[in-house]
Length: 293
Image 1 (cartoon, rainbow, N blue to C red):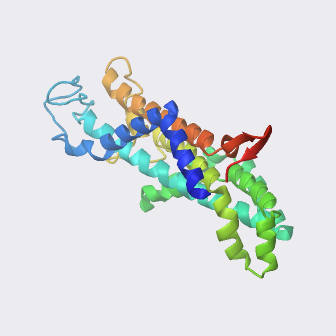
Image 2 (cartoon, rainbow, N blue to C red):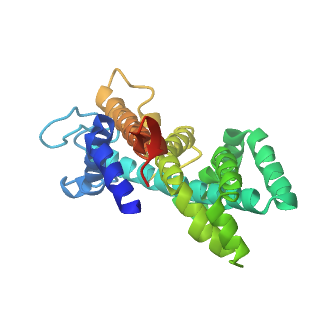
Image 3 (spheres, rainbow, N blue to C red):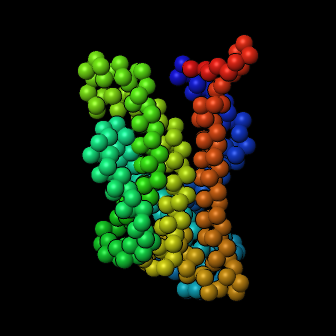
């Protein structure tokens, strides 16, 4: 039963050190990103002209940068922006991969050939080079455009996996019976195909957030992503790249947040993958391997 399997998945997640550590770490990062700005008396764009390059103290908890901006406020804003862009990009890319993969695997024929040709073409495109060229032209559209642009180059491998899963699922008896009864393709896909790969898509989207955050950080680091006066982790790291030892608080805090954020999503993704593994429900019955359903 689905409820029994869901309970088993929850138990495995609760007992997984990676899931607990990743969840606690991600919760702390979310609180810092979205609640942290309200705890400080400084905004990320505020300037304290009397405190240039000041190390952490009671007035500026994480110090200030070269023009007197509060590093704490900037890190909170930068983490918030990188999280939003990464999460949206991961959601867009996983959704696009699901649509393309399911359509290719279910309908086959010319649809499969055309969509797989598109996937192959996208895989050979130098993604970062295209991002660098296109991103500056989307600045007027805001950070949502960056999320969509990153997603446009992050769905192809997942689409291939979804296609293979769909081709296998459409030959299962419950799908064949539904098709024989005249159920339309859209209903078959929605009720019988997608629910059976939901765990894979959730896991993929979780891990994809880390990749999208790294892509956004790279774009912003080189000046092609988020633009001043707004900030992201990439812009903060770039701003301190030439003074990592002279003024270590400017570099270490945003760089540390990036490492912790990527680590948290990878820990959660690995834990989800293990918890949702169908073989984890296997039990030995009468000397043979059975399966809980």
